Length: 324
Image 1 (tube, rainbow, N blue to C red):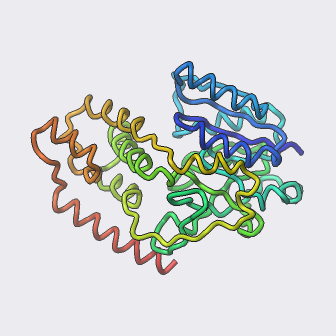
Image 2 (tube, helix red, strand yellow):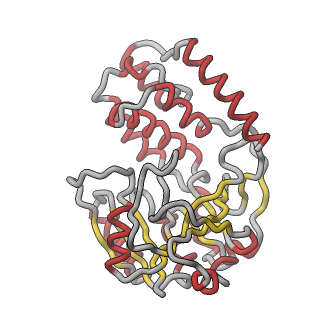
Image 3 (cartoon, rainbow, N blue to C red):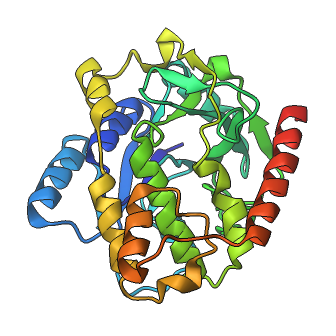
């Protein structure tokens, strides 16, 4: 048995990645990373040094490669197999494994069967890394994700096996749900709320321009990214993060990468006729609103019909979330 962590690495991941690597270093036998972003030399040196401190095996994505998924997980699994992995832990740079899992991970891995996946609670840290959402009225609460798989060499990665891209290789016919007391994954991306919202705005535009997705479908997909809806928060159990450096944990509270996403959004908006995406639900943000006004000398106005469709979707999905 050989347990390998597979990391896709994008931009602005350093501070989160430091915590993620701390959470996983005593859980896996090897760490394999795929860097998927053209970093500046100074930033690249810091990132490489951090990865070398954890003895990670580093690979770089071919920028000209055509791929089916947002993250090239298919290639990551190829690399993991190349390193002799039998079990793969698939968390992103802004996620941390709880200490409760680290303490019994070896037993859990040994009990897994070929093709089996471990589904773990995916806790959304909110405002700081010590609180997470627990309310029923949000899609960011009560979530599960396939983070671990015991490899089946006869199977491959399928990016189309769900509404969102799956993390792991193999079919979803052998799922084992782990009790939250035995381990969970804490997602840190919601701590920097402004950057998160800008990121979703960027992907809304990207989906329309590159994936040719219908505007109404995009608006439905990203709606809850822009609605906080008075979240109910609970404190993380002490055994979730007590294996991490407390200074590094406190540092992520004040992170703000909004400048990065603003640059990406502005770059893409400068290339298109902005009026063609007027019905995208992205104009409640002050930055995008100002960009639209500057380019058109008017404020953006989503059609009444589109607003009505989005409102009905919100009502319906909110009821389903509460019922569920």
